[in-house]
Length: 284
Image 1 (cartoon, rainbow, N blue to C red):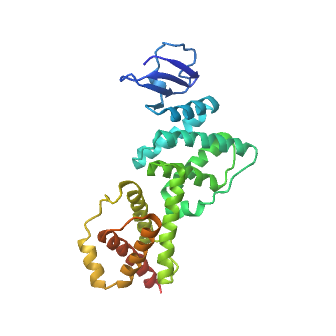
Image 2: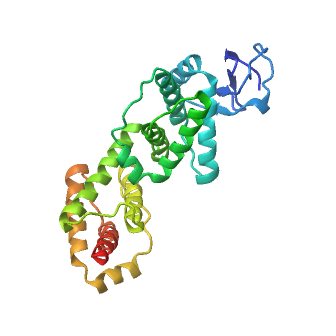
Image 3: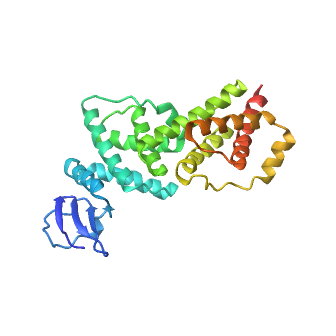
């Protein structure tokens, strides 16, 4: 690959094998170089290709205004997620995460830290992503000699979640509100306090997260497990209340999101509701 345009010492514009314009980022990748020089591919740590005009504009602005160290930190986060969780974050999320890190450090140096209104939801509904946020937070603290509050780990986790959902941050907020609303229906229907640390509740939340993604983006084409044995168990246990609660959730989803749950989806909800409420009953 040859340099088509130098953006700064760590970013250049070039073309790929299909002739598409791409942006290549790497520490010192353009230092001492000029147009038409060969790119040292060993220095590359991120390639953006291809993208629309609006994304291109945001990317170029971010590159011009942001210290390359933040691209490197973002890449470390992305690489670890890919290596350990097999999660691929979209390029748009990579850009917004880089910009967020740079802005957060700039505020931190002035002693200005933001409160995260969704911190509880992130910790409870997305504990894995929150742990990666804490890990990234330590990198920032060590790199820039700052002491960020845990709210910042929540913000970083939000970008990771957005990458998993394949949408923007507002979608995370909507999914968190969805989980909170469904959980509230269960709590009030059975008049119980749920154990948010229990295995059954965490399985319930995982189901709701995947269900949200299916409901929003695949419109009913979700792939459900073989429920035959579980359905038999629910019938055997005669837990009619779990099923009634699931029907209540079905009505809520229809009214709020104009989405009709299938019989299988209702039963699947009932199975999870049965498990988390049974846990609470066994504690008494």
